[in-house]
Image 1: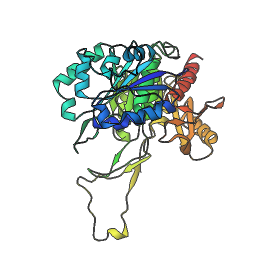
Image 2: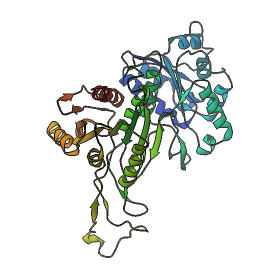
Image 3: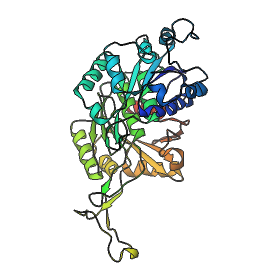
Image 4: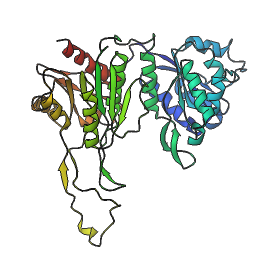
Length: 409
């Protein structure tokens, strides 16, 4: 997504999730960014500074009084950084930052940076829900900071709740979005989708068998979320109809409509379209079938369980085909996805014609399903263009380039 390597300071707070900061640094380096690390004293008790020194080639800053640093290292890093991300950001660290404390390496560096700042909170869910924490988060947002997570999941206490650190890949994605929105990024023109309403579907659908089991697929939703974020950055009004995912909430300007089943997704899309949509991008992996009957209680093993069980399925509606058949004229512009195991272009073109859509994004399952990057081919009525392998956000912008060109015709 970024044309130039970014210089990123990673601040490590004192939470059990600090071990994920190592993975975050590695992920940022994999994407080509230069990384420096600063740590609170508590953070250094969870992950040894030498670990970060080993993977970055620069000493992790833990002590502002270290005589080996020439001058004021927090001031130096504040000038050096293109962006700073704090992960994990604990309840204590958020509170001290919100109130202007600068008595450790992370807080002192935060006080000196003139670049975008991203916090990735991680704490027990009761700490995250405290009114004081919510006030501090809003205060930091008001000062211009961005946030990613926390997400719902297993916590160190063994409980499940909102407080788990977002995954390193998602933090890196969020940081690159922050950079793309800043003056340091080589961003796409912010106005080429201005005035348009873009509806994006994302993620899998879950088709219930009983109260605890469902039929689903491995879609992560990352491509759809990347498309929604990229469309917002280019000026569009965006509605994101999302199946169940573990991804952090998108930008607050994006209206997210959570759904579970294919029928719920169909209803949500129809509701969004009634309000008027210029573009619909069906990036969701919608289940083709659902169980004919859903058990009211958990299905138990029967005496003849060893002989197996017959599951009767019924076909789900083909949402994209119904949209293609129902529209009059060229609006909304329709974009579909074709995940194949072979013959991508042939099958994508067949889908394009059969469903009466404007553009198909085709790819092989082995190239990108569940991965951070992908290799796709754009197929429209006149051409088939294979894009260079890229991150989901890079591909999202390339897809929207084609969408903008089709709209301009």
